[in-house]
Length: 301
View 1 (spheres, one colour):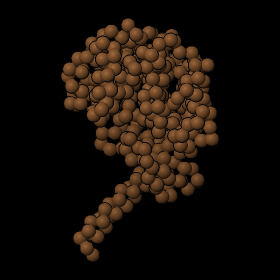
View 2: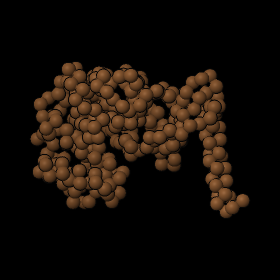
View 3: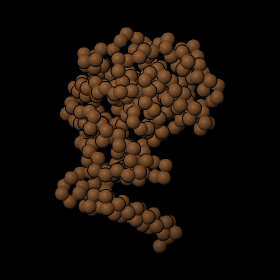
View 4: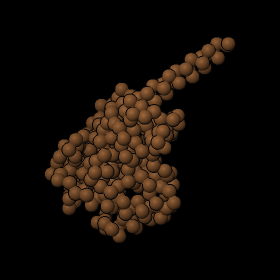
């Protein structure tokens, strides 16, 4: 056997050992051993696999690393199932290192009918009222800590626990220059020039990124990877435009159900998108820093 052949054999052996370990872990959690595992793409947090149980149930299993707490994702999915009608996977088991859910058919291609259906589901979600902004516990977004201390004022919550918190995390990680942090801080002190307090805190999914939503046959089949809390619905709608998750068919239908106040597309959308952009700065740096700076310049910070 060649030297490269020995390396390949060891790699395969390590992979098989890892897969057997995951099968053992799922069997321990569910009391049934899955029949084979198929790696799935798109997992931003941990490795993601599809498998079938002996009774025919198709499941998805996520494996977490040392710095991943999949139990929080399990909590968020269960919260959405309990408090809303949003279609999300059923959590079969959750721990910090393993999350097992039911599999949802679909892909992330949204025709006009699917976008209209998404608008109906999201508008219904936003009708779920909370007692305060934030949540009963902290959550995650993109694997990052997301603080949710219950707060009576939306502007105070958005300022302190979204903009300033994530800008501080990005600065501490060395990805947001201190001069830009100072400019975020200046803008955060003037938010009341553009933003308004909503009628009530609304439950939001929190991460309407394209691959977190599944559709089939003009209908939405599921929402994945939430980052939930109670917020102004506009922060959710703004994020859906940042990477072109939805377009005109979505917003036409949403506004039939929940009209938006004037100025959302012209001003408030960019202000709210500072938060997901700062999340991306913290995770990746690079061109996202320039996107943050352009918004700061636009609003005179």
